[in-house]
Image (cartoon, rainbow over all chains, first blue to last red; front, side, top):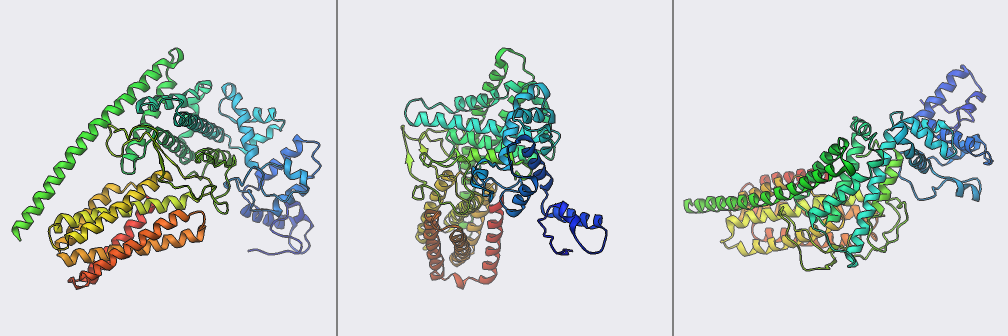
Amino acid sequence: MATRWPGATPYSPIPAAKNLPGGGTGQERERKVVSKGNQQYPPLRALQASAVLRRASDEHKKEPLASSSQQHFDSPPAGHQPEQKPQGPHPSYTGQGGQESEDYESEEQLQHRILTAALEFVPEHGWTAEAIAEGAKTLGLSVAAAGMFRSDGSELILHFVSECNSKLSELLQKEQKLVQLGEAEKKPIDEFLRDAVEARLRMLIPYIEKWPQALSILLLPRNIPSSLNLLTSMIDDIWHYAGDQSTDFNWYTRRAVLTGIYNTTELVMMQDSSPGFEDTWRFLGNRVADAMAMSSTASQVQSTGEAVVQGLMGAAVTALCWKS
Amino acid sequence: MAAAAGPAVRCSLWQRRSLRCGPGTGSAPLPARPSGRPAPRAGACPSRHRCLSAGPRPVPGGGAPLRLCSTQAVPQAGINKPVIDRIIRVDHAGEFGANRIYAGQMAVLGRSSVGPVIQQMWNQEKDHLKKFNELMVAYRVRPTVLLPFWNVAGFVLGAGSALLGKKGAMACTVAVEESISEHYNNQIRTLIEEDPEKYKELLQVIKQFRDEEQEHHDIGLEHDAEATPAYSVLKTAIQLGCKAAIFLSERI
């Protein structure tokens, strides 16, 4: 039911409910407005939290809380839901003045900054809300900022994985440019894969103590879609820069094999205590070599199989032709 | 698929993807939303190759060779990736299936009077498949998992319809090509609704292929496809199969 009380719009903040005329208890109406508001704006609480943070963090900001909330509600579609992708470096909020919209950052950018700052506290606090709180403190925000995120640190881990993947992507792209310009030699496939996986795993070294904890959190059912997505896009990236142009089932086989190599090497790395992780890199080299050997055997089997099938088909057709 | 990812994750994911743009596109750090912004290089041909060294190097794993040259990738920012992904994946699967159907028909009727006709249609389908292979690499689209299945099913359909005689083979051709023409028309409509300028090249390719499939359809009719016994039953069954194949290949 959507009763429209005079003066109340779906966008009005909760305090306005107290001013509504008419019968019924004020609390009842408040609850209705709250539930209605929450229905339409699930991230309402997060928004208000971030608005509070901004106020607490910057005493020089003159815009009051109510008007900033009003501002949010005036332009609802522009990036309110965390699920929406960012529209650009400056979202299309209708700012209260020219200089306001320049200072204004979207919630996602703020979260990005907090999580990046939180990473340096991970070796000490682990992948937890404490690390996020410490990170927020270094940015001058209140520790309540950690309330924006889930308490098990999933977003921090996913953010970290995503950042590592981006760095890997940049690295591979730079390498590719060098090869294109003729300044570097094109590596053979096994060496390329080995180097790419090693480069990616080396990014874990500063956090290696707490990484097993992160892995177990990434395996939580709630996080599996995101972590799987990140993993598959990273493996796809590596193969793309390795020069894979397969358009048949090989596309899947190659990625599956590389995913296996990456995951097992990661696990070995968790338990490796050798200097400079040399055992891990040796393990990686062996797995990649195994994969190359396996693929050559597979291709031999496949061509034999194809020849057999063709022979059978030919025999069948010939037999049919003889019969008719 | 990453529905549960926090905004920070999605933000970085998109950041990462924008780095894959072709050289010189100069995209913003955070790419624009899919609709509205035209790709900076609308004219970039996805099939233009820049080979820097001697020919393709054979890979031990068989399948497509790992080429030493780099295909000029299409700039990824600004295109509606999910829609384009689906379109290219299903079209690739379709051309692959059509190839196998004609292969099956040739296996049975290769030495008959309609052999040359089928061979010519098959050659055109081979060209189509080659083109979609290039597009698939350029747009970094994953092929459908069901390819091995379409491999067998297509051949069986082709050979099976050819065993019903020349008219049966032509009836199969008519049914399949009609399905495919309709399917291409739907895709053309979708792309035009999205942004005809941005997808000009892809639209051109699909339009040309649609015209050629329509030709095949007409050739089939010319060769007495409709005189096949149980023509309408056969046609309906095949077209139902095509619809199912299209539905599955788009998603899986």
